[in-house]
Length: 105
Image (cartoon, rainbow, N blue to C red; front, side, top):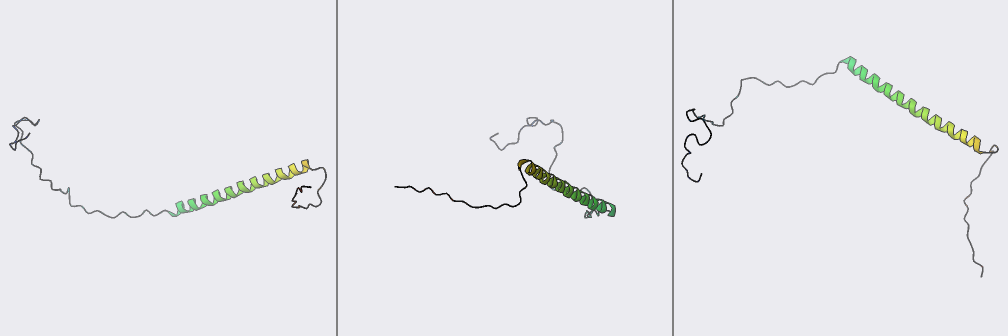
């Protein structure tokens, strides 16, 4: 509405004979209670021991799996090498060879 006059009662959707509520906007405390600081929870000794033991067991299991896998790979390579050779290799040498083509004129 363009004017500074208050709206007629009943135009703003309120019940016409209800008392109006005055809101001053100040906070009100519910009660005078003190807030205590939260204490960090201490882990019981059994829980700490169980965590340490489970970490150790997990580490041992990981090492066992990696070692077993490595041994299997090496065994496969040896078996493949035995099948592919005709005779036993006594010694081997490797050479770096460069081949040059020379034009004859």
